Amino acid sequence: MSTVKEMLDIKGRDVVTIGAADSVYESVEKMAEVQVGALPVLDDDGCLVGIISERDYARKVILKNKSARDTSVSDIMTRDVVVAREDTTVEKCMALMTHKKIRHLPIVEGQDLVGIIAVGDLLKFTIKQQSMTIEELQSFIMEETGGSG
Image (cartoon, rainbow, N blue to C red; front, top):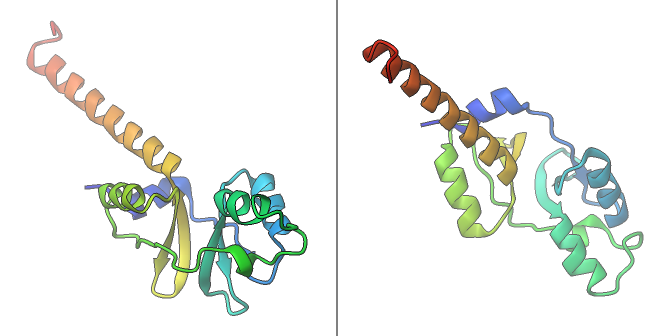
């Protein structure tokens, strides 16, 4: 079974984050700049304390007629962050994200944030794995039948 570590080895471990004291406007601006839908939120010591998403912005700022510039990330972030580790299987991540109805999953080792995966990353990785399996099976069949299919 494939693990998050294998995914991160391909995808990379760079994570764009935001501070809890920053404004929601800054977080949305940063999300747009790097084309992501969520940012892990770190405290002053660099510890993961939450996650803020476009969904949080839409539901907790826009719909409540608040100002994104005057609202801090800590006011609307999700505090109970669902996380996974590098040894978590891809299948477990898919089940966890589906069950919890989340699209972004920070990856931690101990207290350290080491990556983040999104639903799209899981799909891309799974499709690539399935394509490789199909190619291997086709190659095996061709060898066994002498190329006559």
